[in-house]
Length: 298
Image 1: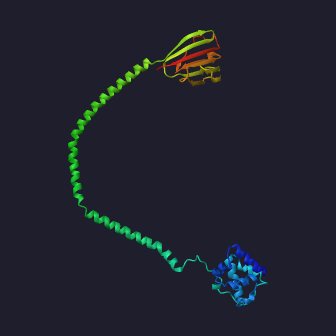
Image 2 (image 1 turned 30 degrees about the vertical axis):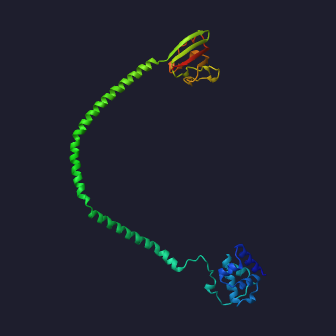
Image 3 (image 1 turned 180 degrees about the vertical axis):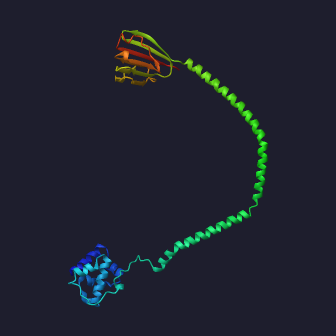
């Protein structure tokens, strides 16, 4: 086997083609393909066919035939003043579109356009016929006149309905005003009660009643140190509160709040936005321990 034969065979196998596949693709007899791979050119019909078959072989396996002829010119028989027929250098492909099918593809857009135009014309024609033959046009005119008469008759009824509606609205407004007054009275009855129960030294105790919420806010007028715990001794806040800043904690679900304050004179305590009045003067006792016991209203 020659170097050219090895090169061609490797390219064929790389493409996954058998000799039978190559024969079907190139229309060259299998024995000639074997002769090309083995370098046995004596079995060929002539030198002209040797070069033609090699060129078709190269094109079928994806090799550049001109490059192959140049690289292996010492192995390939020379043909003087002869050119390869164009039809022998073409590799027939199974995927080639027949000429008849190609023409059909080209005409398809024109056919579709003609169908659309015809369909539009038929639709317009049908609509025109329906409009001309519709007997309901006169009935619609009579219906409009009847609607106008009915509208004039219904105006009197609308006036009566409006008067009744106005009376109902006045009754509704009166009822809403009464409900608001009742709510205001109930709110006054539920006004919270925050009172001192005991005070001694730096300790003071308050009782919060007649409310179902307990929101505590500690506001700084300087830079006091503050510690806040619940009735079980759990620390909820500890640290210095900067000037004009506040620390807010919701004790609604707690029974007691304990506030440990340094520099009480720089600290204000609010319970549900009500300012707590110190029972012990914060200017006389700077450090104070304030306890607020909460009894939630039923």
